Image (cartoon, rainbow, N blue to C red; front, top):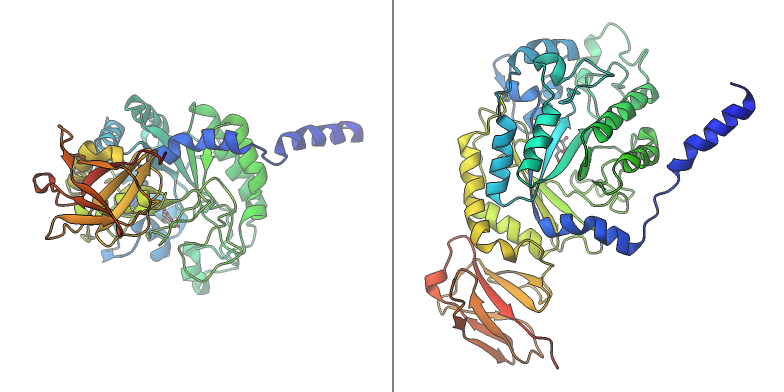
Length: 458
Ligand code: GLC
């Protein structure tokens, strides 16, 4: 190439990489479905699902999708032992989609590739993928099944890759299984490894996903450290490439480490980057005002399936977390870890279905709501829609009355959301706020819901 052509090529290549610019109205329109959804299902499934939290008879606790790291397993050994176990049963993806729908979720985020590096699609730049093991394109099966149920499609993608021979072992601030055996390795494990080369490969893998499978709704990046983030991933270029293929996609902030870390492992990604922030395993006390957020949580203590973790959250916790998060303006992404054959264990299904039964009756108090405008209440949580409040009563008072601390209200009418007749319940405007008398026949053990209609003051 002559220098002029080289320059021209560089300019053309750089052009689409300029900063993403979008008006507030455009952004609101793009985010609208996601903000309305409030509830999503996370699915962690890969080769690790076959290990079930045990390696060489030794059980591991915590998130066992990390077992390769926990047990310090070299990539070849890991692949050789787990590939033969990976035999997805036909139709598994339809079961996921059906369950998500039953649960009341409006989107599903699934692990297209976790830290182990095993891709669920047929990657042309790697043979460490499900197609090479099963002859099937599992990515396609999953997105097809989700769309058939009317669910939005979210794709989790790990930029950490423990299989790729270029992914550095040391000094990245990121985990790597080989750090466990550093002392025993014959030579420096990073000799010959190159993060930039890995990043080229990673960009190509991402482009495969975003260009082949039609519209994807969410790209859920995972994750970064202080040392390896943003520029190390060529994140601006990566996100810009994704947006060229998927102009309306919503991406999280995990390509960017937070500049103000306070040392906890939960809020470590930059809230000013990406479309939403990702508190993990917790609910921020007052949400993250001005920033879209989604709390992701395990159902027990692990994301990937473990045969020995029985610390299941109750359906009551799922219902109340859903409400709590909605009342603070966030989304709840609750995880299922299928077995290696893709089936979702009954224990998980039962809990999701119970959440779904509650959502079936009370979902309008969750989907499409905005945060509590009335202030904290001791008896539960509040969500809102224009001209309307939803009172979620967790602790039903003995006198059947709850007070909403709203002053200068003129007229208000109320009914129990579960009452098909919408019989009016007493709502008295007092100096302390609105005193609402609950109808005991519509009490729900997880959360009872009152609809309060508050016409705007004249
Ligand atoms: C983490 C973990 C991972 C899990 C994820 C979900 O950072 O590394 O195993 O997939 O977050 O939020």
